[in-house]
Amino acid sequence: MNRDDFPILKDDLIYFDNGATTLKPRRVVDKIVEYYTEYTSNAHRGDYKNSVKVDALYEGVRDKVKDLINAESPKEIVFTKGTTESLNNVVFGFAKNYLHRDDEVLITKSEHASNVLPWQVLEKKIGIKVKYIPLDENHNITEENLEKAITDKTKIVSIAHVTNAMGDVRDIESIGEICKKHNLIFVVDAAQSIGHIQVDVQKANVSFLAFSSHKMLGPTGVGVLYGKKELLEKTEVLEYGGGMNSYFESNGTYELKNIPERFEAGTQNIAGVIGMGEAIDYLREIGLEKIHQHELELKRYAVEKMKQIPNIKIYNENTSSGILIFNIDKVFSQDTAIFLDQFNISVRSGNHCAKILKDEIKVTNTCRISFYLYNTKEEIDKLVEVLNRQDEVYDNIV
Amino acid sequence: MDDKLKRDLILEHYQNPVNRGLVDNEDYIKVNSRNESCVDNIDVMAKIEDGIIIDARFDGEACAICTSATSAMIKTLIGKTKEEAEEIIRNYENMINELPYDKTLLSELNVYDTVYKQPNRKNCALLPFRGMKEILEKSTK
Image (cartoon, rainbow over all chains, first blue to last red; front, top):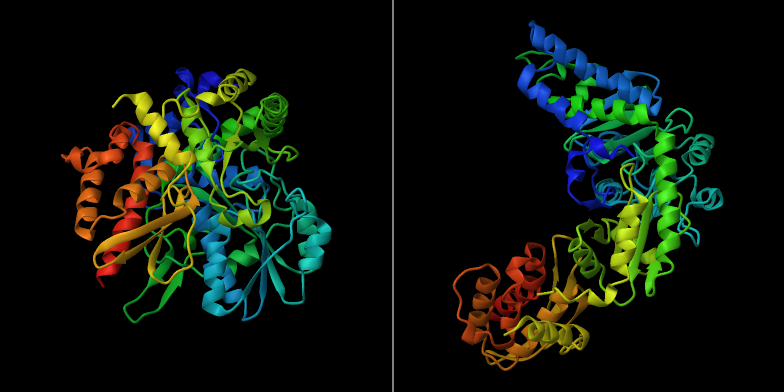
C-alpha cells in the first residue's frame, strides 16, 4: 500500500529489510528539508519568529509521541538518538542507582545486543546478576516461565516487544501485569514493534520504553526514551551542558531543568525530531492495525509459497509479526543474501545482532525478511521465483 | 583464467576445504577473525618451525568466498617461509584492494582477482589473511 509515497520504490527495488531500517515517504523527507531550507533555527533559545516556530514544532512532536504510545504526559518523552541510547540511559542512568549487588535483571537470549550488553556491563560494574527467562519450544516467553524465573532478588524485566532475530511478539500486557504484581521495573525495547503494532505503555504497565524513528519511516539519528514520570525523576542525567540546566554559578552550585529537558543536553537533532513527528502523523493516518494486518497477510502468503520451494527451512512460521527467518539448506545465509541482491531483493543475513540466540535455535546465521506497509505479494512472488533458482546461487560468485 | 574455472576452483575450496578442523596442539598459534558485518567467524591456526609454516588449519562459519579463500590461503602458504608468506599476503591484499600486485606470486589465489567488483565481498576475501598476519606477528614475539 501507499507505494507512490516512497521515492526509492520508483525503481525495481524489492526491500525486505525493514527490521534494519525502513524506507522514507516523500512527506517525511520534505518536512526535514523544509526545516533546513525555510526556518532553520535552534529550539528553546531565540526570541525571533523562526525559533518560536521550531520550538513549537519540536515540542509538538513530544505530544505526537505521547499519543502514539499513550503516555500520560509529554514530560515522559525524552528525545534520544535512538533505541540504543535510550536503553543505555535506562541501564546507566536509572538501573545503576536503583539496583544493588546481587539484584537480578531478567532478559532473554533473543534480545538485541543493545538490550544485553549494557546489562552485562552493569553486571561487571556493580555485581548485579543478568538472568535469562527460559523460552518455550517456539522461542516465546510464557507467563509460567516468567513467573518461575522471578525470585525475591528480581528487580527488573527488560525485553523486546518484538524480537528482531525471530520476530516473536511478546504479550507485553500480560508481562506488564506480572511485573506489576511483583513490583518489578518493566523495560520494553520497542524498536521492532513501533510503527507496526499498537503500543500502549499505560495498559502494559511499562516503566521504560525505547524506540528509534528510522524503523518507523522517520529519519536516522533520533529516537525516544519513554519513562514513567516518577522513574524519570529518579534517573541520573548522563550528559551535561547547554539546554538542560536552569542555572550554574562559579561557586559550583547548579540546578538542572525538569524532566524531560534535563536529559537533552546540547542542540538536539531538531530536523530529526520534526521528521519523526511527520512519520508518526503519516503512520497514524494509515492506521497501525491496518499496517499490522497487511504484514501478517504478507507473511502468511510468503510462508505458504516458500514452503513449496525445496531446501528452504523457515524458522519462525508461527510468529505473529512481519518477520520471516529462513535459510536455503547447505547455503550460508550471506551467500543467499548476496544472490538475492543480484535480483535487487534486499534481505538481511547474519545473526541480527542477537549473538546469544544461537544457544536457543542452534543456528548462528539466518536470512531475515521483514515486511512493511509498502511490500506486496508480487514482490514475494519474485522472491519465490528467485529462490526456486537456488542452483544458480554461486553462478556469479566471481 | 575464465570465470567458470575461477568459480569451479572457489566452489571446490568451499565444498572440500583444505585442512578444515582444528587440532589441540600447543605447537600451533591460533587466532579468531570476525567480520565487522558480524557474519563470518573463523579460527585459523598455524604451526611455524624455524621460520617455515609447517602446517595451517581452520574452522568456523563463513560464506563461500571467505571459506574458500581460507582454504586456498592455507594450501598456498603451507611450506612457505614467513617472509614468503608475508609477501604473498601483501600482494593478495593489494589485489583485493585494487593496488599494484605481482600475480606470479599468488598461484591459485588469483581466482579472487575480481572480488573487488563486489565491495560487500572484499572483507570476506581478506578475513583469513588478517588472521594469518596476526599469527605471523605472534610467532615473531
